[in-house]
Image (cartoon, rainbow, N blue to C red; front, top):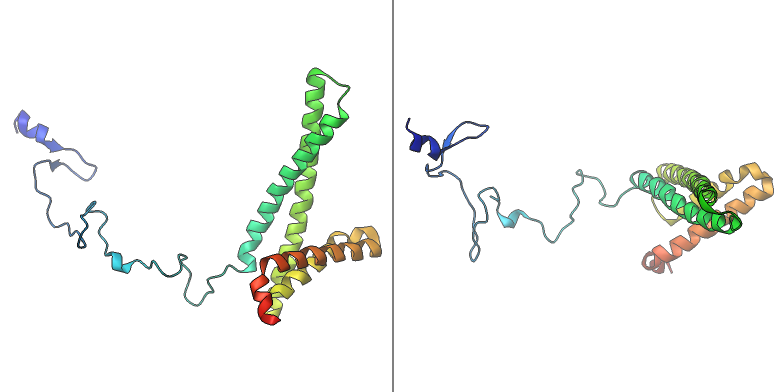
Length: 198
């Protein structure tokens, strides 16, 4: 093999190839008015479902996410939101409480306020989201229907359980808060569906 021939050969993980060899047997689909972008984009655009759903779901499954699937998003989102809200609250309290301090002592105290309040609020909101998601999923499985009644009932049960350590009055108050918040959510998120019932 001479030097010119070795320069014309390329190296590949799948063996050597000759640069000058014609590429054959690569079927490329082109439609009228378009050119082939690459032999690796070998598909017929007729097979793309541009009008239907963009989700890949197993046969027989609803295209809407169920409560069990939304549970992880709800809990994680609540923890992150609680952390952000608590951190901002801690920053505000830290700035207000440390007016008389200066320098690194003030900075350290403000950071402690942010960390403590952020963790406390994140834990509380995560616990509420966990109770809400578990009760909502349980009610949905028991009833066999996923509707607005499940949302309101799980909100009431969540408030009742979360405030159960505050005594009977505190638990009932928590339940009313839960029913109120979830009812407001249902009114805002399901306007069209609720109008069909009226």
